[in-house]
Image (cartoon, rainbow, N blue to C red; front, side, top):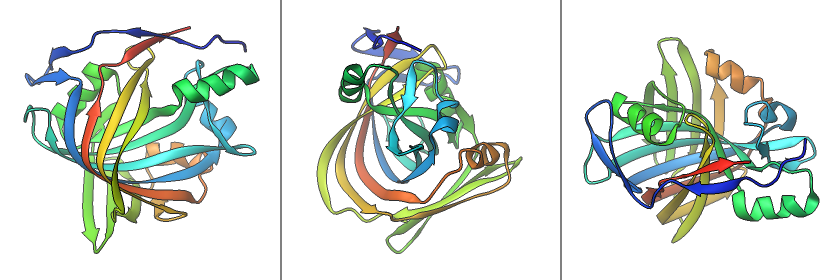
Length: 248
């Protein structure tokens, strides 16, 4: 399939939203957060089934894509717009799809990011925030985050069963700023610019995870997930932008 690189359509530079829960937030939204996560390999063809046609999973090895399993503890949301909450993100590393080698390089440069495939959170206001503002596939679930020395353990589940447990080092080695992108298609395919500034850390081949028996766990198991490529940690300010609609 031949695609031209999607065009960004800015929605606005800043916007105010009143959620169905009554909370009011201003976007771009700045938060204080602490996060740990793993990047694991996955079957590339199966990962392709998870993402919209205009995106393609990034290959990290022959036949293998990359999936991020991320645990986040939000300590502040905006100007205190809502109570703190926890979140687990499942994201497939992607870029805009193209069959042209030259365009593929441009896609990596201009559009590399993570397609958010699942985003369980611990409060209804957090679910409304992600769903109504950016179209993220948020659901309310039970998330337990515990620290064991410099390691953080996150367990995710709901009344249908246990989804996953992930464990990664929470140790940071320095400070810096990282620019990332996230894709969501709940309200039409859109790309958000994300900025992380604060303490950062990472370890090659670090961390571990296990899957339970839950519909999301079975979907993840169907990706033929492999060993972690790396673990990472963050503690600082996380800013998410207004977003851009992507049109072919």
